[in-house]
Length: 233
Image (tube, rainbow, N blue to C red; front, side, top):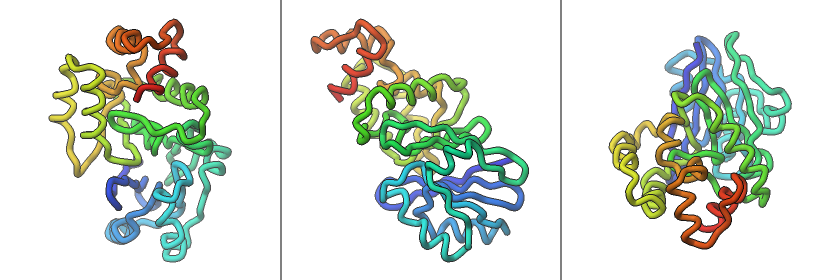
């Protein structure tokens, strides 16, 4: 059975170690010292190093980890092309999710998703690729996972995200519940929770549709609602 360990580094970055009984893979491994210590204590072999996308705040630990461990580096494009990575006989599936960047991918570890800067806990990433339609399709892909799926993101923006969500839906009582469950030392939420508070997964709800209408924005189609929401937040 595969597990994941979350590591915080820099101001608000979150990186991960996916591991089985003997083997591990670092994803966005900026917390080099902490990852190295964890691997040694668990007597694991770091076999792979990869990223959810190639922005510098996610790739900063790659070279040090490669030099210190001899692990194989897989770029997001290589990971996406393979479609999966085997660790101790179990499979980590890789889903291309262009939008935040053209090379963004999501790692599926059983009922857990490492979503990088595609989907945060409470919000989504900026569309730096400029391709809103691709981002829309990526979000739709993630929305289709079961409600109990756990979301592990690339940054901790929870408090800021919920302030934005409250501005859009001041009567959404689920936001207070979401914040009560927030734990800075283990940032995680279920997809079901995200559907209740994350505006970017709620573009089809009457509340968000009403807000967009009040701004004179298009709401006739699902994509129009998405495009309108992206234009005001």
